[in-house]
Length: 374
Ligand SMILES: Nc1ncnc2c1ncn2[C@@H]1O[C@H](COP(=O)(O)OP(=O)(O)OP(=O)(O)O)[C@@H](O)[C@H]1O
Ligand SMILES: [Mg+2]
Image (cartoon, rainbow, N blue to C red):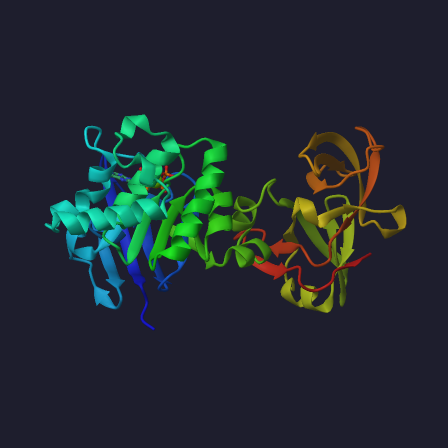
């Protein structure tokens, strides 16, 4: 099967005040037909620039863009056959919803009767049939966003580009629209390329995500894989709320029996861990808040003082301090009897930790093998 969208060493540089920056830096990736692919990352990491180059709204400085194995690098936006929705919904205020959605077809010179049919079908998909005669100002933010999506899909594009389409909506509506977009994706036969800075959106909606950092993709993977096996400390701490706990650990112990020491705990390494950490004096250990458990003292890896409890509803987010003063967070169901100031015994879930390179942040080990507490 051919690749729906290929970015081949794509770079985009901008020069501002005599300074040149690479907004997108030698980016290469393949997106398969029908995928829901998301670019996620902090502000300024190059997400919009990437999407604009895919759309043909921005030229590439170097590299190639291919749709279905066809080089479209120098093809105009109109001829790329894509649908687009951007962050700020720009509907035509004096046109009805019907005319807004049908606009791309009218421009393409489609006969009126056919336009009417396609607009009805798009409106039906998005549950806005009863709004077709209204003006944009008579619609809520979420409904306007549906119209913008309707306008983007009415030409039945093979690739639908969405740049932060939900960021203007309130939290509740955002969650609702997330489901709507997923439902739409199941019903239309299109590849979706989505941009967001919201990691929850990225993790819940996508078949694969690209975690962008300074114009580069730090990791391209399924949401599950990015969460369980982050390639870098930066990816690990970006994905997941509250963020992964990461602290320094010293590699000590006798030859053949290395241990990790730091964060108020001592952990004996397995043979696999030891091999991966050979030659390191320091490493960074990462444990997700939900991978820490409150246990009886004889099962504990370390002790910590409970400083603050924040109820999340079903679970609590606990701020803890270990014996050596490291601040860590734990998320879980905590007995009501444990009050602030209490001393807790904590165990690390053996299936869920990471060890990172102290300088590059590259993952050296993922917690898929058991650690043994010393
Ligand atoms: N037309 C332009 N001229 C100069 N610099 C630009 C231009 N467009 C983008 N940039 C710069 O390129 C970098 C990437 O911008 P981009 O808009 O792609 O980021 P983003 O990831 O979409 O961020 P956000 O989450 O804030 O939307 C930024 O440093 C930005 O200032
Ligand atoms: Mg942007």
